[in-house]
Image (cartoon, rainbow, N blue to C red):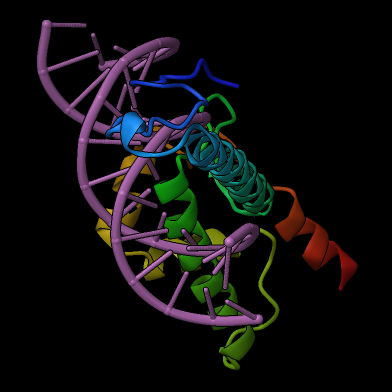
Length: 140
DNA sequence: TAGGCCATCTGGTCCT
DNA sequence: AGGACCAGATGGCCTA
């Protein structure tokens, strides 16, 4: 959890404009609603981040030192789905060996999609990291 | 130090 | 009316 920036008014809901123009009751009510809305928004974003974390776990990743950003995660998921779909629909190929997906993936991915990842120098140097994909193939 | 990424707040809009 | 969702603004943290 990060420290809260709280630009003007942390959790209190700013209501910076004319607090005197409302009755204290209304002002309090508005403040409570704002705080509740902030809490809901926080919870919603936490749920979204949880979903991103789950997505990161099932998406290929080179190296474990740096986790994919949200944008990179979405790009990788998209490319991954396309690659898997291609494996499934390509009738000319025999069942792909475990690592063949990488070739397919890089084949499918747009340069702008993976350029941010290429610093990992995958093939020669590092072993790409992915668990669920191999599990999928092991299961079949 | 600049730039990227992120968490949080906030106001607007839409829906129930 | 109130909740969910969204996008913009803001400021903190981290890395090159």
